[in-house]
Image 1 (cartoon, rainbow, N blue to C red):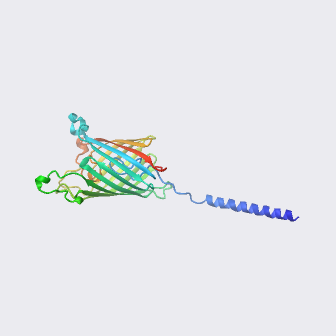
Image 2 (cartoon, rainbow, N blue to C red; image 1 turned 90 degrees about the horizontal axis):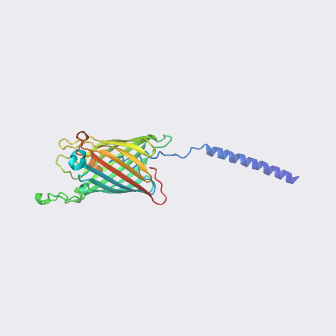
Image 3 (cartoon, rainbow, N blue to C red; image 1 turned 120 degrees about the vertical axis):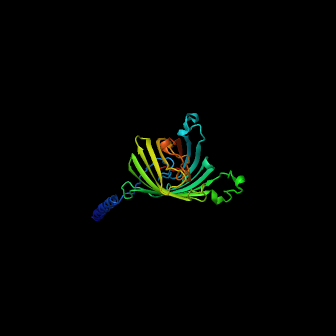
Length: 301
């Protein structure tokens, strides 16, 4: 009799425990799910010349090769710019956590060395609780040019290292509206410690707009436009603009494009683009990005 009573009590306790466990599971199931973030708003850390809001993924290294030919309006003798001296840039970009990225690069134009930091401050969520992604950018540039007029002028304009330095800052905000369409804007500020011409400005600011339209699984059209707010009054410079075709092939992203800018560093093309689209002062160029994962990292691009 006692055994029957103990068995009944144990069975009742067991049913009660099962019911409580099920209630706990149901409660847990009703908890808000972990936030998921929009990925691949842009497929590369660059649109064409300008930075996109993207950073590379965790423990990811991006090796980039950029090449830009001469202007098309140079004529047939120079094979529409292909025979002219080209601007080449090589760079390495790395992120440990997928949000803070560091990069270094070297351009043949002006023998320019550059370094930058890029941080993804806010990330767009799939539930639109955060409708935008916001990325901060800070770059520093150092020219290794020699002053060719040193002997004639009697002084070296690059006597002080600070004269070789310039800086750029951007706030990049954008949104992935659909799997095929993304858009971003970025106010920018560029400061030059030393300017080339008396009429040039030490501080230049403006805003860029860029978009990506994906029309197949691996292909997209990208475009950018950089508007200078405080334009020079006597020096002749133009707003940088570019349009390109982008294709992803495994770990590579390849872009071929047209742009009126010869420089590929922010301190070059934002303020000192000296040719324009209307007279065919445009150049053919390409970017190649090769991504390597280090220590099991995974890129969101």
